[in-house]
Length: 303
Image 1 (cartoon, rainbow, N blue to C red):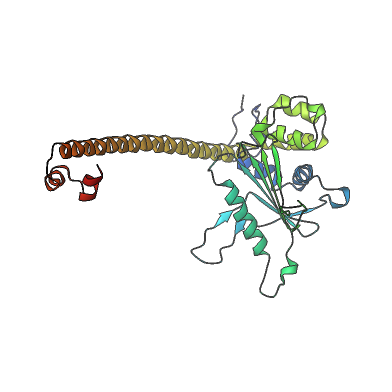
Image 2: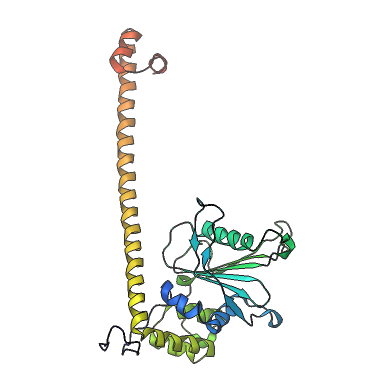
């Protein structure tokens, strides 16, 4: 039960309802402003060796600059610069717009090329890593929930171009419930998939990193201003999803109607050709058949 508070009061409110960290507002608060949570999540996904593990991050401007006025602008979820100078963009996506692979490539290209200033050299470009956390399935033919993509030689599969790395994590695919038997990445995916208090308490028993994020989520969930912003964003996303559903239904209905119309048209055309054949059999002149049927001379001759 939530306790009523003054609208301008920032003190926590009593509520047992946790925010869903998959909603972008909540995700950005937990991982786009909190270096500790970001580092723990990114290290679990990337699984770098000890000497390469992320030690520090600098959160950057999320607005992608446009080279020309007519260019498409974009706003990233979380963009960070690492201690080695490389960049990580982490995107949380709940709705499937059927374009996410291309969108990810667009994000990579903008971040990679955006590093280069007028007097810079290409060798100054730093690696860019794209991490996509998806609340839908994008690769139907892949059983694993984690699909890491790199550039490699198609013949010998040796990795080439260390500057490109892209990860797709399909949250719905994970179904493990034995929390002590899974690794750091699986625990984080379960953190996003099942953000219930009981689940997160169980996960926290096996991971200090999850325990820290769970604590931050509880504090955020009890903040009245954050809760109001979260609920507004949640409603907006629901409206978008409903709109997509309606558009799909309307598209299907339109396709069915077009199919029926085409079927009728094809059926009528077939009947006309049969009529032309029968008239030819009866010895009716071709010019008369053309005039009566609306067919061309070539169509009548082939009928």
